Length: 149
Image (cartoon, rainbow, N blue to C red; front, side):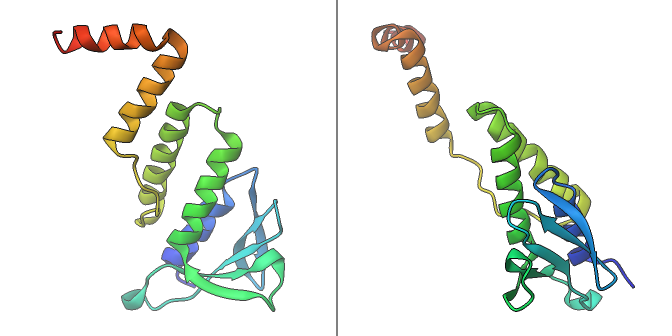
């Protein structure tokens, strides 16, 4: 059995411990959510039509089966993993997302559906944090000096 994109995506998700683990179902290596029991299984796809689709059994129930793009499932899994494991610091969270997105691309050749924050939002967040820590007047004075006023 050829291990294509679908298999690589499922293996990646299964390694996001502690929220997922490996499972063997019908001779297929799968990812099982330790949060709700959802099972993610790889699909056999012809190499020329490979798009990384996976089979999802919601809460482990085969009667509640869906086929979706594996990159979407991996995006949700990575977001949840970072939420659970990251120190609640915005910079750390962003770095974790970036690292895992890059690692996912390296391991699978696919891309997560995670967007980078825009520069304006990052600057506004930084100013809010500085204002909270230093006070409004201090931040205003720093900005005035920085722009030459």
